[in-house]
Amino acid sequence: MNALRVILEFSSPVHHGTGEGIAHLVDRAFRRDSDGVPHLSGAALKGKLRYGALRWMRTTGEGNPECRPEDGRSCREEPCLFCQVFGSPRGAGRAVFSDCYPREADWFRDYSASISSPVLQAGGEVRTTTAINRRTRTVQPQHLFSTETIPAHVVFEGRISGRLNDAQQQLIRQGACLLNHFGADSARGLGFCRFNLVETEMGAAE
Image 1 (tube, rainbow, N blue to C red):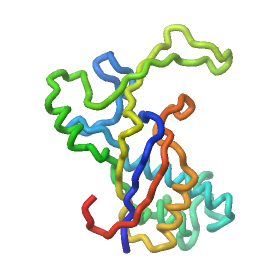
Image 2: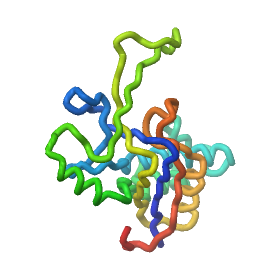
Image 3: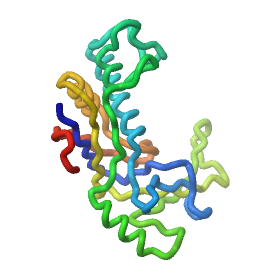
Image 4: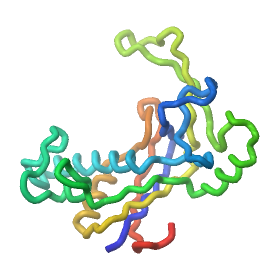
């Protein structure tokens, strides 16, 4: 059984944060590892593909009608295809989702090591945005905040491994076809992308 290589190609800058800022200069920093390399978490990747797969199954009428993960109800007997892949309260799923790193990870790592400032981050861009009052649809006073993004030209790659048969891999592929963004602030034009899933041999180098 083979793994799936995940390739995310963005058409707009992306923000995938931790909820923390940088020295009061950036309110929402991009998620980075200990070497300063930005990455997309495997948990978030799983959540996006899980959402897409569930949408596909509900649209096509596939799967066990008694299994309603969106309502907190899972399969009572044998796990259905969805639960086999993504898991349920009754058991872990077979698919294992890695973090997604830039193809240029070495550049980010080397550049971050060369920066003496603890504030500056390699390859990021900072956007200043105002908060909007949803009721009045006007700018809220004293709600100016900054967001770190990674430019659209950066391609992220990850991996989905596990003992997945053809049907289980196909479910993940179908879910990916329904997705068109990753990360926060898609309403502000961030994170629009294409999910490409490429079959690769187990144990093959990324």
